Length: 396
Image (spheres, rainbow, N blue to C red):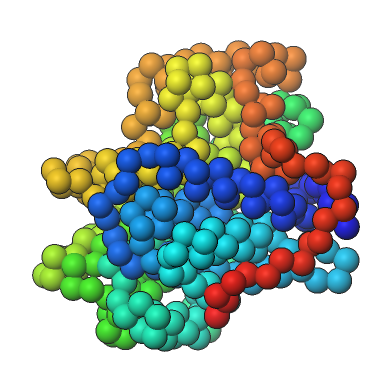
């Protein structure tokens, strides 16, 4: 099959196995070229097939020499279509880990269900015994609560009043104004149900009850705050309510774990091109401007650079883990520097369809978007016939 990108809005319905494998290998190489990390030994990553979850797994394995278990949705290929990028990413990781002599296992299924939690616990018990680090990196738009059977859907909306600002169609570069109507109380609550900390809490309770957590286990979930430009639709919107719940959950988990020397953190990362962020109005335009500024200042980081810095400079240091006044680990510090935000704000005031290519890094945004699916990767012949069927070793 000759695989070409087929994009529809913020979704690409195809993925390239060789491109995904190459990008995973580049992340592995980045970590292997860095000083080793004295960190975790056995790691569970929930939501392990892309973004921060995948990068966390790579850093744990190739930076700290840890054994890993990754949990993620199934995405094998079907008739006439490719597998998902997450499937190809995970296959590449498993092969690289196997070649490095590291134990690694994949559990596929809906991480939000009791069934997958129980299956994961069985794999931990039989293969690793215990885990000392749990990464929670689940991104989903819908969740069915296994206790109540109720299904909730998240929305990306402001709260209290309509929000109007600039946005961009990153495929054609057209900058326009968009108005988003405020969320209802039901929509706010459902977004918290989907994207808050309840499922993270359920995972940690299940792991503890299953006897597969070390006494001093650490757990981390990921969040974002962002600039004033995106506040109304992000941190002060429905997503922000969910992130507040996530942070409150971290404090509750930390209280429970601290008795045995364990820890729980929310880590606030920088703005990155992800499928989730691409779906949020205003954010792609903000990221395009931000990337322009951070690249010019030599501050730009992707997922793997952020996660290496998290593990090496925050989580596993002799000086202890530095947190902000809310107890959060901040690796968005370079994004939130005053000089960076001032320059982004100046660009925001001027940016339009006519000047976006000069003022922002829209081309870099587009490239990273397609790289999420294995395209736009150096060294890959996208005109070649490739086999879209890829087997994941150690699949459970």
